Image 1: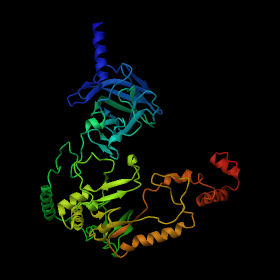
Image 2 (image 1 turned 135 degrees about the vertical axis):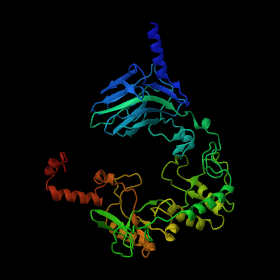
Image 3 (image 1 turned 180 degrees about the vertical axis):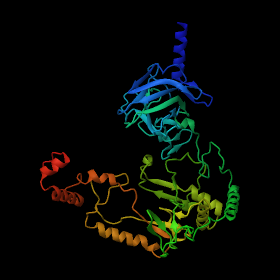
Image 4 (image 1 turned 60 degrees about the vertical axis):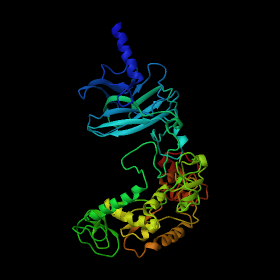
Length: 498
């Protein structure tokens, strides 16, 4: 009886969380004699195996929809409210990559509600940590942030009560092959709780940095701007140019093609290449969004900032602006409010009068020093206009063009290419968009539109009103191909009446 009692006590401790040296808590250590007694196996086979000089639990997963090992607490629930998330150490002993997921449940969990889910992929013969951060709704206190002080990245999924966890599981999402994973340990990590208790206000300093922590490179004083500027200049001056390149960055040691004076694409042997105006192969390596426009909302965040200038204080007055209809993550102020640019404020401190031009010139040198050869998409207009480096422009379809009304995308609806005004709008948009760079040989080309919602077209066309041009064109195409509605129903296995 004494042996049984000690075994039960050890099992209870292993499943209720023992503090580790790092301050996290070990929930389950699989260095044990047998799989945990409260673990259920659904289309899996688990056993304890030697691992890393100790033991671990090997799990073989069958080829079914959701094979899993399912863990429940010794009592009714676990209280994990002191922690930010749960993680499991994994090893893949096979030659196949294993996609794997974890789910943490409140009562009533169904895979979408009352639970949090995470996933990763474990490469062959490698280790990985499968981590699930708890969504407790704490991020609403610091709205608009994708990463939270103390807590880390904003978690996804439904809001759960971490004081009443009823289960967690490790599962595979519809595997197409049998898979095996080794589970070494399950741990609770991080700090839980409300952000008002974890993060003292204000938490943003005058440079836009987090106040309550330190790291290499954190700016401590405005004096450091001049020091860093001198250090950058020295590094740029000492750097050597990449050999074997033409004035555009093309590969002069490679094949010499026709020098047309413009960037183009050309198939060389069995590969398509960008080719410089000088006729050399070019591998474009660039950075998007080279600009100084970055802003953050200050409205609705009155106690966040240790410093903000007066709205009319020179030289910072121009860095305030009014933002309306923000696309996302600004619901508490309905997407409307005042913003301020900490990045531009730091550039003023670093470069003083003429900061815009000084920053722009330094950006070209800095990017080249880092090994980039292209100013990429969404970059500031003056950066493109004055660029000594190859760059790309951007053009969109502007004008009064009917959208596919039944196609609802993330950024917006797709334009209806069958609308009578579509072709004219594209011609007009392209003509205006390319005009500033039409005579510039450094322009590689143009991106057209952005992140179009192609996936919405398939269902959106027939979900649109009867007078939608794309809908009419689609129905006409079906009529020409099938002739009769019964032939369409037979081919598509539908029972449409008309």
